[in-house]
Amino acid sequence: MSRDFIPAARPLIGSAERAAVDAVLRSGLLAQGAEVAAFEDEFARDLVDGRTTVAVNSGTSALHLGLLAAGVGPGDEVIVPSFTFAATANAVALTGATPVFADIRRDDYTLDPGHVASLVGERTRGIMAVHLYGHPTDMAALGRLAEDHGIDLYEDAAQAHGARLDDRPVGSFGRFAAFSLYPTKNMTSGEGGMVTTGDAGLARTVRLLRNQGMEARYANEIVGFNARMTDVHAAIGRVQLADLPERTKARRATAQFFDASLTGVGRPTVADNVLHVYHQYTVTIDDDRDGFAAALRDEYGVGSGVYYPTPVHRLPAFARSEQLPNTEWAARRVLSLPVHPALDDEDRERIVTAVNSLARAGA
Ligand SMILES: *Cc1c(COP(=O)(O)O)cnc(C)c1O
Image 1 (cartoon, rainbow, N blue to C red):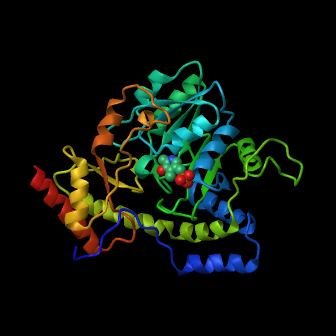
Image 2: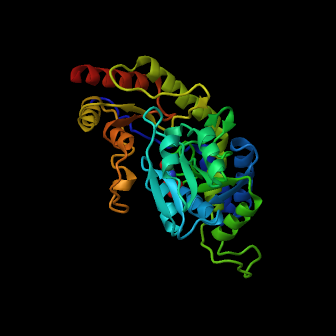
Image 3: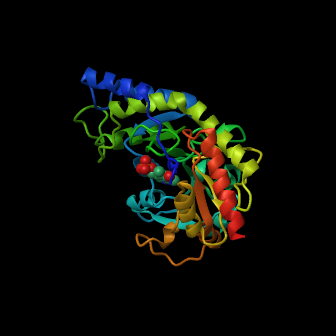
């Protein structure tokens, strides 16, 4: 390979993050403190229309603690997509509740409200919408369904910082939402997560659960975890939050270029009322997706990713036998191209040339 390899994902960490971390290290106050409090306030203001925001140590903790605080537990069912990262279903299972797997729509890879409706039963406690790849789920349809049945709607917004639906931000629809701040997500704190909610009682319970069940020191009210974010991580997250609008713009510009330039592969569909933040730019390859990915890498030096090759309900951890045709369809065909904000014009051109050449050769 004569040119630099273009990786599928590349976290951007600069001198501002290094300076912010250094300031925390010099202060000697490393654990959850003033930086975390400031990060929570800024995240609330910038991303979720001022909803209450509680920082935790991962997106998985945000899901887990949010579900526990919403009262989900043994005997309950929560409807989740199978076409997602396993953490979505793990968090449900870790509360003692049962994840019930619903199919997706082929156009945007998010929950199919019609199939979700067919799964609601006596034990259904809530629905977990996953805004996969940075594209919001159809929250209007799921909201009506939840209201009709008197159940909750939650959001896994791990991949969707800043995405909007009907000009309203993701993370502001559900009883609670969970964001991830893992390095490959649209913004990072190293590791970290955020719970956002309009329910003050739920927010208080999440705060208790993240800190051993304590509000006042050594006066533990409930049984809890240590799921705190550190000030070191919050310092990184605050810089990344300030940079997010510009980086989202870069992702969207790359997506627009791909939309206009890619031929011979299935391109993403985006509804008019949606602002997609392109955590992934995902195409579909009908024949031999894995061979296509290998050729992209070996012949053109272009990385790509398959999110996700095995539907969660088929993983050994869950081993369910239900048929979810659109989920199976997507798992065989999806391929995510580099769309991260570190790409330059030359990278974008190379990706398009590589994909179009391989698509032509395979046709
Ligand atoms: C990344 C991710 C999570 C988990 O977040 P972590 O911060 O890695 O724990 C959950 N759900 C989805 C859809 C994700 O992409």
